[in-house]
Image 1 (cartoon, helix red, strand yellow):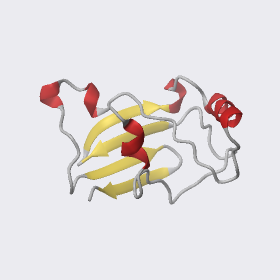
Image 2 (tube, rainbow, N blue to C red):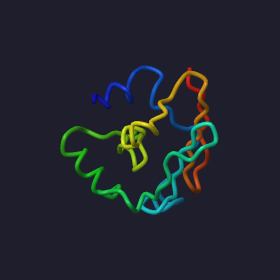
Image 3 (cartoon, rainbow, N blue to C red):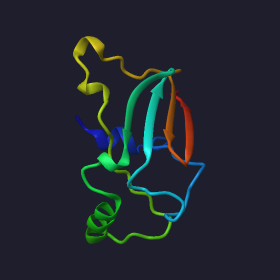
Image 4 (cartoon, rainbow, N blue to C red):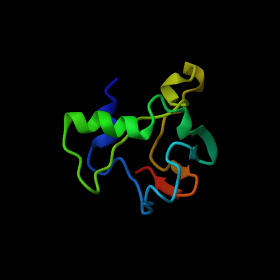
Length: 113
């Protein structure tokens, strides 16, 4: 599957409106949750990522220049729909309401159009 196209087209990859500085949170220990229409689809903690944030930034900075304000998308955690058994795969559709929560940062509400 081509995940890049699904996550980086115009209007996709929403984030904000909250940003916090590195001294306000431990980026390597934040609970995260994703709900679709009130149902928990993904729940994890950043400490479970394969690479920590410093390692990811270091790797990226070797490939291209990073500037103030740049955003690095790290991928996804366990719970993506393609990992469900075929009879449990309920794909997103227009009108679905998604809430992504990150501890100490806030909630992002998105309705799929």
